[in-house]
Image (tube, rainbow, N blue to C red):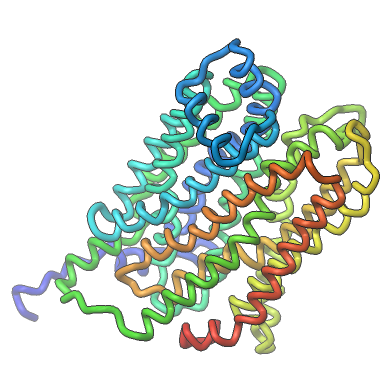
Amino acid sequence: MSANVSTTPSAYDTIRSQKTILGHPGGLFVLFFTEMWERFSYYGMRALLVLYMVDYLIKNVRDGTIHVVGFATLQRGIEAVFGPQNVQPMASQIYGIYTALVYLTPLFGGMLADRVLGQRKTVVIGGVLMAIGQFLLAAESMFLLGLFFLIVGNGFFKPNLATQVGGLYPLGAPRLDRAASIYYMGVNLGAFFAPLVCGTLGQKYGWKYGFAAAGVGMVCGLIFYLWGQKFLAEDHLTRGKQSHAEKVPLTSREWKVIVALMVLVIVNAFFWAVYEQQGNTLQIFADRNADWHAFGFEMPSTWFQSVNPMFIFAMTPVLISFWGWQSRRSKEPGSINKMAMGCTLLGLSFIPLVYIARGLGETERISFLWLVGSTFVLTVGELYLSPIGQSLVAQVAPPSLVSMLMGMWFLSNFIGNYLTGYLGTFYEKMSRDAFFLMLGGLALAAGLAIFALGKPLRSAMGRKV
């Protein structure tokens, strides 16, 4: 052996030699719990965001009771484009702009990690910025500044944690789809507890306590990630430097993959435009038109946002087993067909709401179980689309661009979340059943579009996906 060749094992070699947990590297569960705490932080804040603006912030700003730095400028900008906005449409617009930008910044965070900082450093910077943002939300005057910190911090954090899952496995590993679904359960474990903790604190004891609890969750996630570094693979940037590989231009096949992913980004945007109404108009509907009494206890309406992650816990193992059963019989749908099925199921989930909302009065209430049933179907659709889409990017993206393309993938969330805010402005202009019918129709159209585009997309990616 040459004296110039190092015999020190790389971090990736070390990981491959470690004992596994449930058949997966230990690093997967470090990423699982880090993402769990970050999602606790994000969804805890999201559970309160629209209700906080509708029931407290905006009307008090307009009455002159409180002052929020930058709010007057933001309001003038929105009304210059869309005309005068009542409290609910204004809250919907702000919600849409915020959640859209949360998914735009990962594109730049992914590029920065790929070229300059590496995934690990970028995740830590993002976690610190998001913790600051959550604590700023607890101060009324700093509301918009807090959202700004969350937007920037999420851009650093989100694409660079998700891509580290792929780094734990060899290229083409058949376990990667399963790993993505396990990781996705971490997302939803945090999302489940967040409304129960932050929503309850915010609605029962004061908005600032809910936002502060979300900040504590982000700090916990950051500490856990720093502790678990030894279980993670080296950054793509670090591995590239060690290999001293000469950079080569993208091949025509790789360019076709990028174009195919861009097409899916555009179509998937309509899925997210409908899906994200859970934190916008569906939360308002749950608050004003659903009866949350059960067993002599009135649940806070923000608990509605725990229903979706609750079903994810229940259905993820079922679907993983079902896909395994299909795979053994060579009948498992490819990733693109799964995503089309996810959009279709999302559209079908609005049928119960269209039915029950017909003729519903402004203050008339329905059983919360109608929302639970609708959310069950919506959740199965989500599981067919969201983790599968991220796994698809990890499988087909050129290794040198994997974080950037994961960031690009989140552009569908950017476009979709902005559309969520825009569509939400029609909530008070349309009857409830017509509004829900519009949402369901958009999701079904997206599903049909993916089915129609399936063959050329699979051809462009050059593999069975």
